[in-house]
Amino acid sequence: MTHKTLCLAGGCFWGVERFVQALPGILYTQAGYANGRTEWPTYEQVCSGETGHAEAVLVRFDAQTLTLKTLVELFFTIIDPTLRDRQGNDCGSQYRSGVYYADPGDLPVIEAVFARVRAQYERPLCTELAPLTHFWPAEEYHQSYLQKNPGGYCHIPPGRFQQAWRMLVDPALYPMPPLELLRETMDPLAFRVAFESETEPAYSNVYWDRFEPGLYVDVASGEPLFSSADKFRSPCGWPAFSKPIDPAVISEHRDTSFGMERVEVRARVSGIHLGHVFEDGPAQRGGRRYCINGVCLRFVPLAQMEREGYGGLIGEVE
Picture (tube, rainbow, N blue to C red):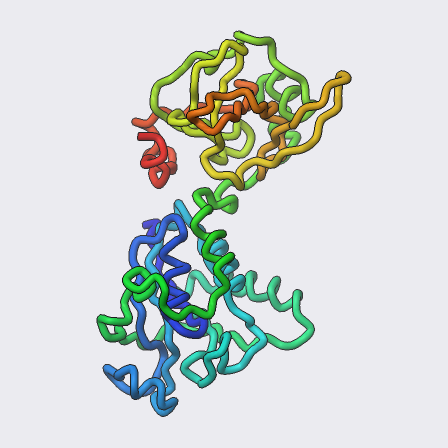
């Protein structure tokens, strides 16, 4: 079972729910009232501060697409965990922040995130960490409020939503194997290209003229890098893509080797050398050409993506 449930309280639940809905792997959200003393409270009762509930969002997510660790880390980016009974301009016990877990087995992961966050602040954290004992759905007009009212009130900075909307690939799903293991298991040329920045000969890799639907992943970590939907024919002799599947999965670096001025492309998790990006790609695709060494990639056909744990990205390939 890869589906998990978590309840997040971070001030007004309108903004928290909208932020979470923008993340990959989210299956279901519901705004409501968590861990209070009364049954079926109304919004007015909760706002009185007498019921003990926190405005919260119940989240069900696919842990194969979004890890519990990453979800909690992202939650901390939209709150100030040092504030007690307040977030943004909203004050009162119902606006306290908290992470409430449904599965006790999730507690060690959440505690580890809390410990890392705690080390970032001089003041103590006020964010609660507790089991989810009660959750009552909020009134219907509160559900997905900011989807229905895009200009509605929100205490979360707009930039945080941009971060969520851009995220397709969770790096925590793709841990990097030990370097010595990779040295033993990878093709020697692939290892030299990936870790010593060599270049494979043009037209030597099977992927340069392959166009069947599927996903191109990092040969070292397995992190998704490129979609076949963004691949195009190029006479260069290497696989060519108009863009990565998620802008965050690669980094670009100035490269002045061999007396040339180029932009090198590296993978996010593994840091391996992938190739270079040029500004001579098809204009209708944005004008960029990611010229990638095929030995640094592994192709996962569309028919195998679900089985290999990449099912959440099928929509990016079809």
